[in-house]
Amino acid sequence: MALLTLPLEQIFLPDIFKPKNIKILDAALDETVLGSLSFNGQRCTALKIMFVPSAQASDFAKLLAERVERLPVGLPWQTWDDGTLSKITPLPNQKRVEYMKTLIDDATSKGAEIMNKDGGKVVGGPDSTLMVPAVLYPVTPDMMIYNEEQVSASHSRVSFCRCLF
Image (cartoon, rainbow, N blue to C red; front, side, top):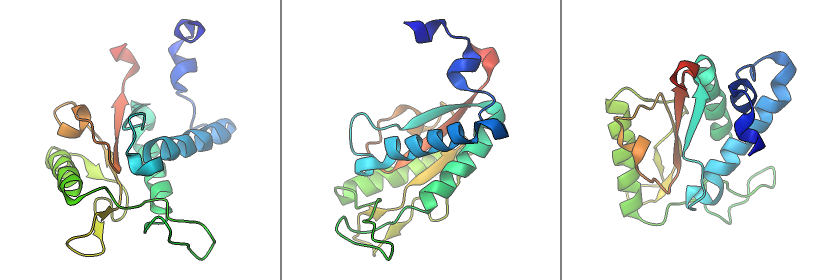
């Protein structure tokens, strides 16, 4: 209940991009990546849409895209040079890949951009289910991805304006 009584500035951190708050921003980006892409986004509690203050939304999307680009893409048991395992792994089936392509195509046809390199790309051939997550921005309510449950490797950035509250 106490959280509901806080001013919007304390809930949404409009000054999160100020140099004094870089650790908070880093933590927010780390938690966004973890919350949206752990288990390849295939869990009911995965973060799928993030509301970010309008003034910082574009910057947040770019920073998030950079983090997603650094994640190793491969099979779950694949070990990389630095000893880490793949963080982005195959989707459950081809039907899910096609559905994600539909959501991404709909969003980009309505003005969203894929912010990360290779976002939405399928790796490993036409029958592969290994899809690179797409960071989409800006996302608006008329896009399918805004309203539909994705349960997959994609997530959206939506900006908001304080005047809407």
